[in-house]
Image 1 (spheres, rainbow, N blue to C red):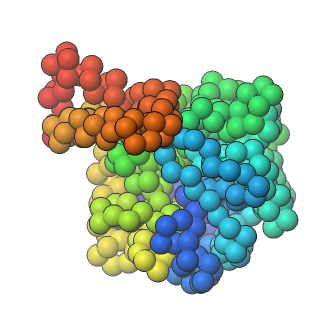
Image 2 (cartoon, one colour):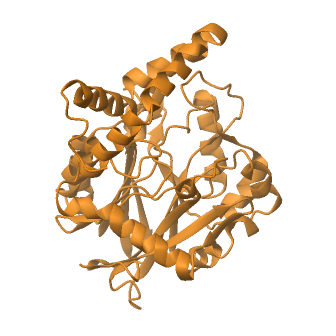
Length: 388
């Protein structure tokens, strides 16, 4: 299968004898969108709603939790929640499946998680990627679509020590070897299998080596596609062993108060599938504004296509080059000093928050695989050994 960058498509995405699956990234009625998604449940999707409605099955990353009777947990990042009033917006998107393998589904503890699960069940939305114990969290979702049997599995980094244990609630942990075995087992039972990781360095346009290595390892088990999110900006894609890997879809209905343009961009992945497997795919890029999201068209869409092609170029040679270039930029911009200075000041004003923040920085891959390689390359005099 060959990627046609000008069309943002590959294979035969318009096949009339196949089914269409849409994968969307982070959905959360937070910050400015808390009101927008409640007041205009359908309108906030803009013209992306037409794309969603044209699909046969829709999958989204549910990047928050219903509070229920839960209380906010202590963690390094923000606690994200939705209210009952926002569920109409989730329904407006026509989503039938939600991935819960992310770093916010336990933001209000097990009680908030259970309230979320009950709400999804009442809406007849299936889910996977988290549970009240490890077996539940790692259990794949198997569903049927007009005679097609589809398997879905997800996993994440267990930010803030939120990974499930044998007898403790949490998310499906970062375990690429387990996912490889799970994919192989699912392929015996399903016509198509899809893997949805949630991980990587936030706000980095280039995937970290640990993500590249993990997703390529999983691709060797031959799922039909690997579709990832969490960095909050779009990242590139590649075919590895014939398997398309989308490293980050960027934000979806997820508001960030910033002028940084690529936190205001994302794309949906539309897969065309049949009993024969993956027939092709079409990417649908969109912009995010104060009213919701809207499809990119004309020059904006062309620019996005060029961006995604550029972000995908390192996979043809040294796949780590972009990431090490990003580490170089962060080092010389003073990012490291600024982040640590900001964290240390919490000890004077909010020591419990400071403890949670540093625990997260010391235990989560997205942080350890940022700081350790950066400092190591500086100490060894290698920080400049990449293009700007």
